[in-house]
Amino acid sequence: MSQPHHPPQPEYGSATPQPSGMPGQPYGADPMAGGFAPPPKKKSGVGKVLLIVLAVVLVLCVGGGIAIWATVKDDVGEVVEATKTRVVAPETLNGRPKVTEPALVAASEQMAAEIKKDVPEATSQVGGFYGDPAKNDLVMIVGVSGVMADPQKEMNDAISAISGQLGATNMAAVEPGPLGGDAKCGDGSSEGVKLGICVWADRGSLGMVVIYFKTGKEAEAEFGTIRAAIEQRN
Image 1 (tube, rainbow, N blue to C red):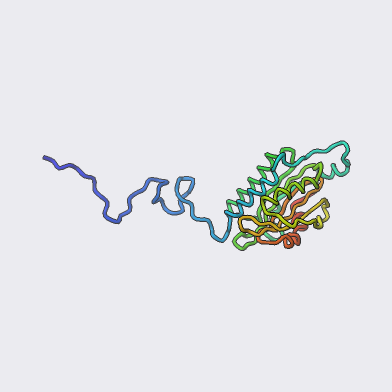
Image 2: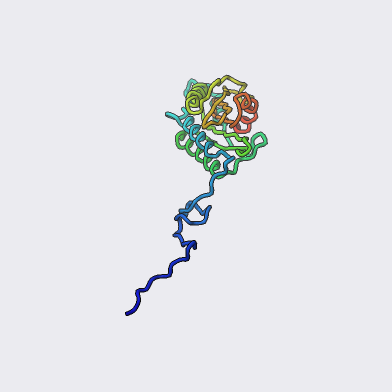
């Protein structure tokens, strides 16, 4: 009588092949293939940065968004000037290069896309990161251009929103720079990160600069130069 056939058993301690995407796949395998991604760099703080990004996006897209329209009572010269305004993401910002961290690049694109979706009348929109998160040197910019019916109201509404989202306090009027309009800077905090926040508004744009790991006063010192790099008029 023949003996029953048993498949060969692996030797003790030998590796058992695993199907793709299951535990046992090489560490660092492509997460899109069902494997495991390498852990994020501990020093970058990207996770916290992304949570703050979401808060800022909510601020600029809150409610009905930015009211971009003009009435017959508006100053024609101001409206014409406003239509020439655009916001851009320069290659460098006060000596800081654009961040190449994939998660932050994606977040930049998401910010601009969300603003474009919620403010269809906008003539341009921008979101971006500059610096090096691993060195606690990081600036986030976000803005939108179009004819603003009431710039001061738009700025104050944004500040009211970030007071809850980013813990903004001591938001005080600062010199807006040669582009005019109104601007305020103050202190903020989110996810345990100190933030220097500046917001500006004029007839042609609304924007925000957030400098991580800095105070409002430190952000104010850079605000004029940063805004001039972001906001342009033809």
